[in-house]
View 1: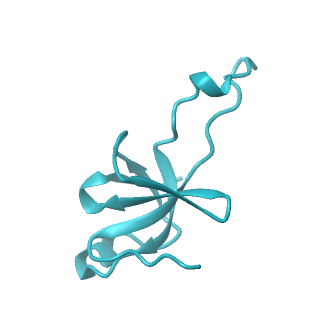
View 2: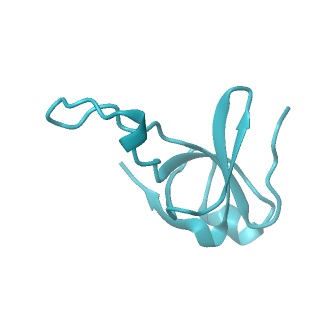
View 3: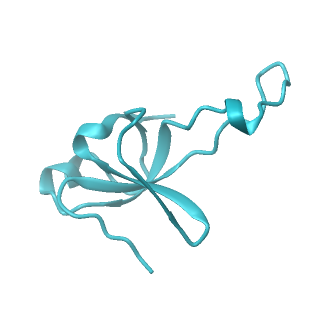
Length: 90
């Protein structure tokens, strides 16, 4: 099954949560913060959005933005344009 977002929405795969701190302390699942950076998998049909955000971009998104979905054992998020805060460049 394939998901194709519509209008001003994007589909992204969140980055995995940190397993350890920089000093080596293991973070339990209950204390992990949900990641706020993800890789864009698909971009909706909005022309302006398609010019700004491309598949493969890493983006920073709002803490409570978008809808979480699970497909084939992987977690994804569908976000609206207003939930995207920035494009992350390495």
